[in-house]
Image (cartoon, rainbow, N blue to C red; front, side, top):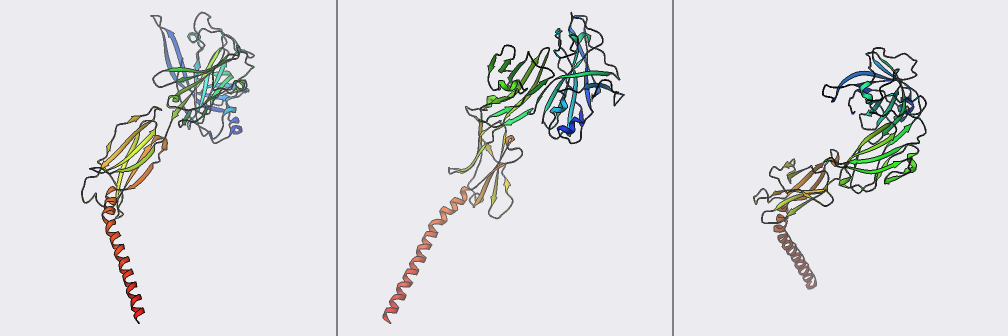
Length: 417
């Protein structure tokens, strides 16, 4: 059963070694009460409760005695070992994990078929990583083998002290990835367990917009069979299940799900891949019956783009944003990118026949708040040049003629003397 909860937890700046010294974290526990109603349907009621994740041995007392405390003993899959970089902000979420009808025992020492499970997820608010740890709790009493485990979960008291063991951790350092077209990118997925893994399954799926789900890769350690590509099988033995997307396309966009199954647990992390391609911008003038200044944005993705046109005169005034801008229809190319043009018609008037400069400013999500700026001399300026140029040529010829004539006259006068 999927549940969701978040609490913001502020922690001073620390590296990996510094974070290993952290003794506890404030978290939010999503508790579930599950029952069967009179019609035989299962219903769930969620409650959100404050909790503490305390990294120590179960014999230690709670640091915050007024809260629910999960005492997590140190192990080689201590989630603190996987925290890297500045960790000034974390979100800590604890919720129950159901195995359904399964009574498969966790393979490491102390595992029981009736163990109760929780997951603890740390999310960095700046998107640096997501880490999920599976916590095993052995209850004092066994549960019925003839009904799902969630119908006999233990009741957690207001100041409950729960002894837990971290047995598996799953993480990604790329929860959200932005990449352009025709690029190679790697989606990070890493895992670790507290014992040698004889039965392990790794899978990657792509969930595209619209609900279409595609299996990209699968590997089973028991059968040694591999389907698909993109993951180095040799790296899986060391806990590296990262997927390489060789050539990105628009169709590569979506949510990539890395799943690691070690019976009876099945964990996954989601990675959002966003295709971001900046526009190629050009600004031209069209000499037609009604002259136009045209700004084109080509080959961009995703669709939304803003185009503004400005005009400035030779007097040095501040550029004026034009309001009579027209837009063409969007064109979608075979590679999924888009193109659009914005243009302004220059009506023949004294104002538009001057020597002016037109500029185009294009903004797009790929530019991260910046702009692409292009400028061009208006067609009125070229008209002025065309009208003036013949006169300048004639004036030059007249000046040359006068100079040559004066020189001849001067030479003739000297010879007579």
